[in-house]
Every structure is written in C-alpha cells, then in structure tokens.
Length: 295
Image (cartoon, rainbow, N blue to C red):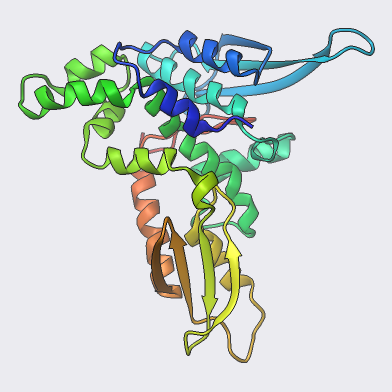
C-alpha cells in the first residue's frame, strides 16, 4: 500500500511552483494505484458540497482484469486556487486503504455530519472517527503536496524580511491565502513532521488506562489516523462500572509520554475543536467537501 507520507516527501523536493494537479495525477498513476482518473465540474451548492471522489471498477472482459477508476467532481463555481486544492485533496484519496472509504449512502451522510459536527464532541463509537479524521487530514496532505517544503524554504527568508507578502506567495503557488499563511507559519514544520513521520517504524500511538495507584489496567494501540484523545475518552465512557475504574490515561507518541485525567482529556478535545472551527476544511460524501456556517 502506497503511503501518503512518501507522496508528500516526493513533492517536497520540488522548487518550481505552482505544482500542477496533473503532476500529482502522473505520479499516482506511476504508483499503480488507479488506472483511470477523470475530473468533472458539477453544478452543486458550495455551502453544502465542494467536491467528492467516487471509486469504481469495470472488467476489461468477462474473465479479464478489472480497471480501477476514480471520478473527481468539484463545484463549477470554485475559484481556481480552491478548485486546485479540492481536486488534489480528493485525488490523494485514491491511495486510501479501503477501510478509510465509505461505501454506502448512509456512511457518506454520516461522514458529512462527522465533519460538520466534529467527532471529537459527539459520536457513539470510537471507530466512527476514522473516516472524518482521515478526511480532515486530507486537506493538509493536499496543501503539503501543492506547496512543497523546498519551495517554502526558498520563500521563507524574503517573507520574514518583509520583501514579499502572503498575497504574492498565494499568487505564486496558486493556493488560498489562508492555507499559504498556514504553510508560512512557524507551526507548519511540526504539522509537516506529523504527516511524514515514519509511522511504520515508530508504530501507532498507545494509550494505557491506569488505576488510581498508577498501575496499568489495559494497553491499547490507537489505529493510525484516529484521534488518540477521542479514542481514550470513548473507551473510558464505555467502561462498565468497575470497583476500581480507570482514573488516568498514559499517552505515548514518538517516544514522548504524557499522563492525563479524564477532565484533561476532554479539555484537549475541546481545544482541538476550537482549532477546527477556526480552520477552513473540506470533507467528502464518498468524500464530500462540506463548508461550515462560519466559512
């Protein structure tokens, strides 16, 4: 299975911008993750839906191999910079593992709701978070591909010196100004690291449920792509009424360890929600891009 981190690192080497969506198409085709990729502009309400990807297959003959097809639809009223970002974000979903895709109308509808009403606040089961969390990260993946790290490094010095501004850079890379500001900010390197860190070597996040005395009850490996705080909160909520229920959780990531109480976990979730509500995002129905009311 092709990893998104490898795709991002491949494009990180590019200096010339804007990166064209066709370059991403060519690279993904070279990886063999899709046989045919088509783009369509459709008449849809962008306050509800900006774009989506549909995966389907057809046989070359009665007993022959199947062709894998991806249809990417974007709203015909999007500006060029947003259309490029939405197309790339949906395009990168062709390398999603099958369990990150929704296959029914009901699942697609639930995904939209999970993105608009963040899963960090309300959902009954931890596994429901995986689709929406994957989709939220998708916009960051697309930004990283279309605004390579090498190009950022070349622009950073004149930007910091005040010789060029965000409008100039946004025009250069042909991306929305909000996301250009995000890439040029000091926090981007940390965000980028989290996207490309070698998870196949470091392994997934781990959550250990602790008793009052600090002794462990259970150790869970959090599936990659899931929010570890929401996962832990849901596991705590679903615990039966034990004589000695879990009092705290030990979180482990990339060699770092942190112990949080249930109240502190909830505060982490609320903090992430506040960040999500201040961040323009896209989501899909099969992979619907849904705009919230404050955008």
